[in-house]
Length: 361
Image 1: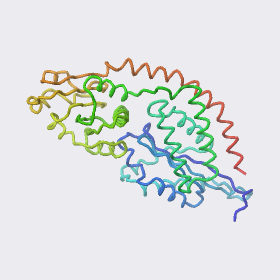
Image 2: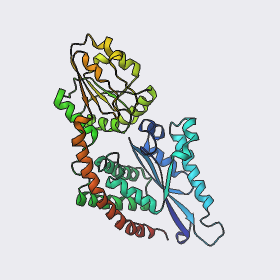
Image 3: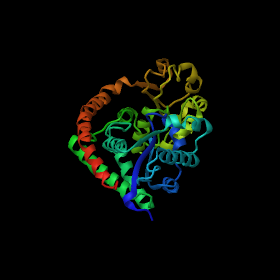
Image 4: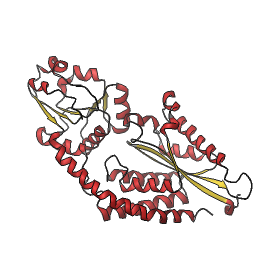
C-alpha cells in the first residue's frame, strides 16, 4: 500500500460543450450508460475517482488521479499526466460513437483543465454562467444528479465528493442571493408561449421544428415542458438524428417535410441558413388543398421563411421581431446580474482551492 504522505492528487476536467461543438454532433461524444462509463474511466491506472456530467449541451468528465511525490527523479513527471490524459481520450473514443473524422479532430475539440481551473469551471457551470441560457436551473440539476449517480455507482470518492458538495453549496447561495436563476426565460419559452396564445398547443397538434442549433434547443426544452411531441428536420437527416438523440423528437428528412408540409399545424423555424428554406414555390402544390390553418414562427436570423407563402390559404406567419422585446428584456436582466455572480466566484475560488489542497498531502 502506498504511503499517503507521498501521494498527491491531480483533479482533471476534460469536456466537450455546445460552445465548441454543434449541438447536433454532441451525441457522438456522449455515453449510452454514464455510470458504466465512469467505471471504465476508473479502470485507467492511476485514476481513483470519476464523475461525468452529461446533458444535451455538454459531456464533462472529472477525474482524480494519484501521483507519487517523493524525492525520486520521476516524481510528478509530466509524462505521467500525459499518459493518463491519453488513456482518458482513448477510453472516451472507445465508449462513444465518434467516427474517424471526429477522432482526427478530437484533440482540437477537447478542452482539458486542471487544478483551480477545474474549480472555476464547475462554479461557473453550477451558478448558471456557462449554461445555454444564463441562469438555467436544469444545469445546476445536472451537476447534482451527476455526483449523486457517481456516489451510487461507487465511482466518486472523498475528493470529488468534497469538490461537488462545496460547489453545489456555494452555487445555491449565489443563485439565491443574486437572483440569477429567478424567472429565467429562454427564446424557446417566449416562442412557445406566443404560439400557444395564437393557435393553441396541445397533444392534438402536429408540430415541426426546423433547425438543430442553440435556438432550436431552447424550443425543444419549452415544448418538453408542455409535453408536446414534435418532428425535427434539418438540412441533413444526420443533423436531425444527432439532435434528437440527445434532445428528443422524431427526425425527418427535409425533402419528406416539404412533400408532407400540409400535415403540420405548427411549424417553428430556427436555423442559421443564409437563404430561404420555405418558399411559396416549394410548398404551393402540397398546401393549396389544405383546409386547416398552419401557423409558422420563424425565429431565424436572417429570416429563412419567405413572406410570399402567406398568399397560400390558411397560413399565418410570425417572425422573431414579435417576441424580441420580451426575450431581450429577459436577457438584459440576467446580463446585469452576471457581474455580481462573477464577483462572488472570484472571492470564493481561493477559499475553495485552499479547501481542496488539504487533500493534497
